[in-house]
Length: 298
Image (cartoon, rainbow, N blue to C red; front, side, top):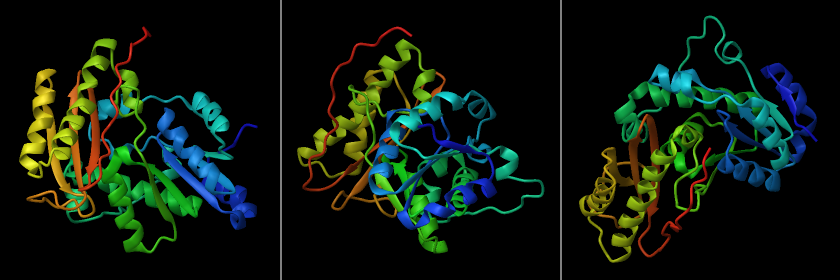
């Protein structure tokens, strides 16, 4: 059965009112759904009576107008996929619904969680945009649980900080990064890669795996671990925008990996900016499986 599509917050709240006692799971997206999104929907389906998917390409979190313009919009396809994965309601508001005339409020999360990694490179406005739109979506849906992918690890940390600071009554659930057979993290942006660029992009998970291998061999120096990533990327002719190893909870810099640490990177492959990460945990071997795949022609 196709999910109910609603466009306004008023419609959404009316639709969800009879179902709140059974638990509401929420998966916020910008559309262009892939297997990673569908895995989140299936997890929400397993744990909640009603599942809501939002589709909203949020203009306030894009630093580049061209990136916003190029972001794929595939609502009909997304709704069909969401139906198969168990969504009951699709909230697909307009920009005017989310940011009406006179809108003048920003939710801003401070400290290292928003100012390092993507925040340092893209500017404070990026996570201001993320925090503001997620806060508005959570207030609109009022879910019991909201599901995010671990690929956007910093976003998850920012959202958790915001939810805790503002006392929003929702559980933030982070699910493992969904990957293709060669390890590349699934992303809506991957569709913009040519076949040759897609082959190059496989260097990202290989580089993270190189660091994981070094970590498994006992390396705990963040500089050496980051160096293993950079060497693997350089072998593919790629120059990262950043490779950083920080505390997995606070995102503060660390001198040695003695507790869970986030290894995060950003790399441009052709016109497409890709991010990825792994968490390094002493005593835990959780390396990315890397299986060569044959690319089919589009």
